[in-house]
Length: 96
Image (cartoon, rainbow, N blue to C red; front, side, top):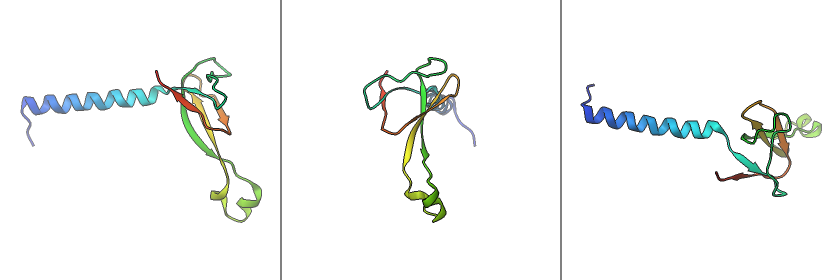
């Protein structure tokens, strides 16, 4: 398949936009705790994190093969050093 210059320009611009979005996502974000305190890494004092979720397994429900009934925690991984912070309550992303 062949493209003319205009089509190639549009494809390149679309790719550049997608790359910017990916870079923004990978950069992480700043967060506040449920107590409205800004979260800072305990290890390196950085303030950008990637948000995740982790399942909190219990022996009883694991024994009964009902792990999906267990609660979960919010995790924030520091984008600089990788230290993982765990939260039982929801955290809010701070707009930059």
